[in-house]
Length: 217
Image 1 (cartoon, one colour):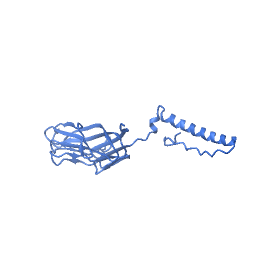
Image 2 (tube, one colour; image 1 turned 30 degrees about the vertical axis):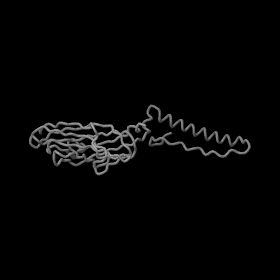
Image 3 (cartoon, helix red, strand yellow; image 1 turned 45 degrees about the vertical axis):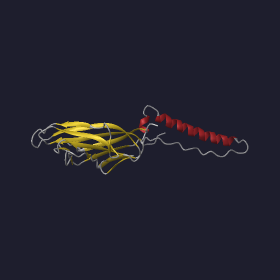
Image 4 (cartoon, one colour; image 1 turned 60 degrees about the vertical axis):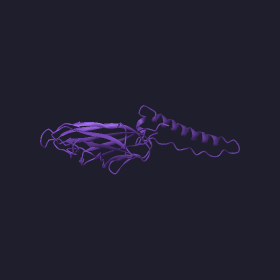
């Protein structure tokens, strides 16, 4: 059975009395009635959960985060974590130190990001982006994005870097999105909300975490 929030309600365990020393029809009728109600509710819950739209009743861990500040690299020889200072949704995932997406349960997680990159130099530049788990680079997780030269003075070029990645994590683990640039003229840029037409602000970085599966046994 479901409540108004479309969440399944766990059937209450029936309270069955102790059997009398001699057969008593009323006692067995009451217990059978309570068990019949319990099993009917259980079957209803299972039917709703495993029916065609049963996924709407599942409440899996997830999180969504973004940053509304520009993010600039101080040099080209250092890898910098991407910051996600604002929490939009948090259900089993939190952000620590503005960059560490930390999970509360073991599992396989899907990490997704979207970065608003700009280039103000006269040359095309590269931006390498990869993942770190608990401070250690994850092998074979790097991607290289190329940003064209600026269009003109005061008119930088822009691209969106976006991808997803599956990673095994246990409770307390954290993952970071990390990057390095070929020029400090390349940065992550945030934009305020716009007008004519009215439109939302553009974060410099967005990240989501979705629980996919339990860890293999």
